[in-house]
Image 1 (tube, rainbow, N blue to C red):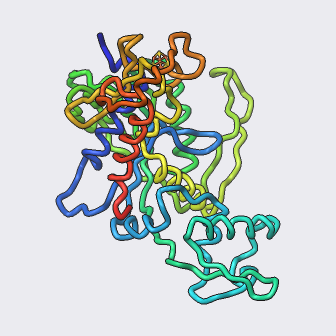
Image 2: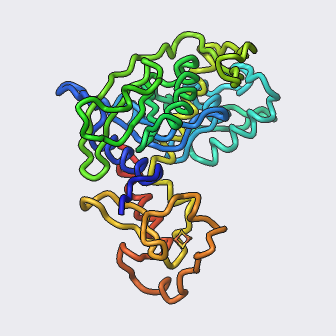
Image 3: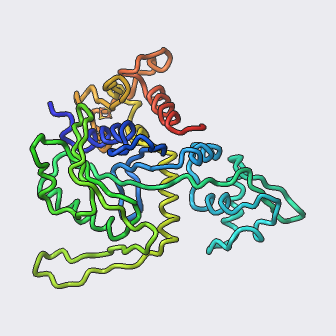
Length: 349
Ligand code: SF4
């Protein structure tokens, strides 16, 4: 059976490949650090796989703030907190929303141990513990399409055009399954020339660049496409779009990076049912753990493996009292194992 025909298992293989082999044109002097995550983006656009290219020293500094992400409110506080004690309203720029939300973020940061606070009368003073490091260098977005047929390419083409116009990621790629043809068929599809094309063999993780991407203008204003004519060639209606300023893009990029830092790509288990008796993690090439459903006898998708699955059966209580092997193991052990691997990819944690 072809276990990589559907997108989910293929996507996990792309993530695994990226973790091992990014960047595809690695130079010997490349000393950047790389983090891989999946299913992240904005309200309008979610990418399948993302690779963060990071400054290794700064990434290690980032670990002082913990594995949990910093949301936009926390980022506002820790990035602007001064080295010396100061009343928070004197040192933080006006957030553009009521101060009470800033106070709430200050208390959260204090509870997490990433900010110092004290009271001076009825005023809250703050002082930073560490400077928030400039750890993110680039964001690479990868769309996974194991079978890039014409209709899949049409949908994907529109999504990639959105990415190119917006310029939120530094690069966008399509990862498709290698065909062995002299010229990968994906090259004949109508995709934006700015997008790279990667031909990946999900079994062996051998990958070849069929087309190199262009770097996108992340520091310039982006164009957000809100609506486009959908009525084919005769549709004369206008597209609607808006400009997005570079500062807003920079904020969004950092928020995405923070979520990626927290989640990584092994978080697939968070939305599945590892507490089902049929849920297994199966090892591939010794290290890569893939979800497997013993009832369906294949890698199940995250959408299938949910509370609504008709084959779901809770793990027997007796499993929870004994040790268990990796394969066929109950939910808690599964989560711990994947969590440990996620932490291993975060230097300094
Ligand atoms: S039976 Fe359903 S819930 Fe259980 S592991 Fe398989 S897909 Fe997931």
